[in-house]
Length: 222
Image 1 (cartoon, rainbow, N blue to C red):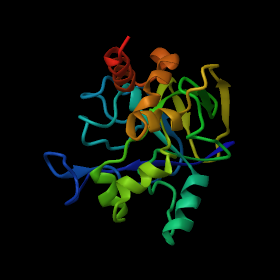
Image 2 (image 1 turned 90 degrees about the vertical axis):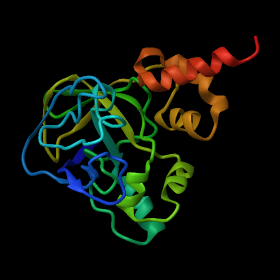
Image 3 (image 1 turned 30 degrees about the horizontal axis):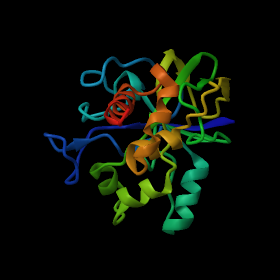
């Protein structure tokens, strides 16, 4: 398991974002050399966990529990075959493109060490949005991405560090609850009846997803 690329984006004006100033950092490209990764702070004020990476719409992106976004190269390859077009590393706006890592099959709360010191913890899957669809330029992209059910993973920073392309990825800890990123994604998008299962992941889960699961359970007949 290894890191193929560390991808950074710059703020750019586009016609397809809901950001008040019409800018997005979704167009990410592989960086050369080492990149520092730290916890960016709370959502709404904190942005990307990667130095030099732009996260513009902090209402929906970035912050402690979405500090880093990872996508498996294997999933990009699968989409390449389906879409009939090349998808270079960073095409999905991911910060980390991995090889040999089952990113969407990772467990909520699973911890990865990348390089000599960085430790990340899996929190949730990525929910597709209008900006993502505009960036890819594919019709019905939000629906197609959702139906595929391989969203990639958001991660929080447990221990800061520097990483670079080629660094090994090591799984340090796998919880025993069985709640994967893919299951969490399905629960909050297309299969709401799965929401009670998310509670097993407890505070390792992204706070918004945990709140959604708790509200759903509270509304069910006793």
